Length: 213
Image (cartoon, rainbow, N blue to C red):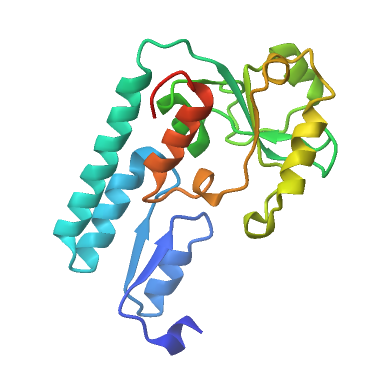
């Protein structure tokens, strides 16, 4: 199907299956990028801009994003760093099958930028499987949960409310006690791209509501 489309350029997210090499062997012009991390986003934007003849626009976009990220870092500098749990997966309606953001993840970068400490930053896995007992033991100050809402386009307010009600059963957790549990369902949080500063800013509002955003 890709060959039939006769593309002028194929942009490939770096992957372990050798897709770039396979396409090049077929004679396709390929640009491989790595935008899995916020830190590499500027380079990815620059590479795409150069390959598409929009180098100035790419440079402006990358610089704009970095300015916004720097502004967020400065805003939260010196503030207390709450412990944050970001739940990326969970069995519907239960505390089974939990997966969280780990140290090597894009989400970890955003949480740090927004002035928080990732609850599972000590995990070598980007998205470790965790159990509820670990969460209870680590006592998160803020919980951000999108585990029930992978299909972001069709999430209802009732689903969000159900997530909050699920956590409300555990008032011994500081985040629950202090009403700092957030049910989110926006792909801006999990898809690295030009909206990275928007995602970091929204985390900042959750972690530091006392600041003017």
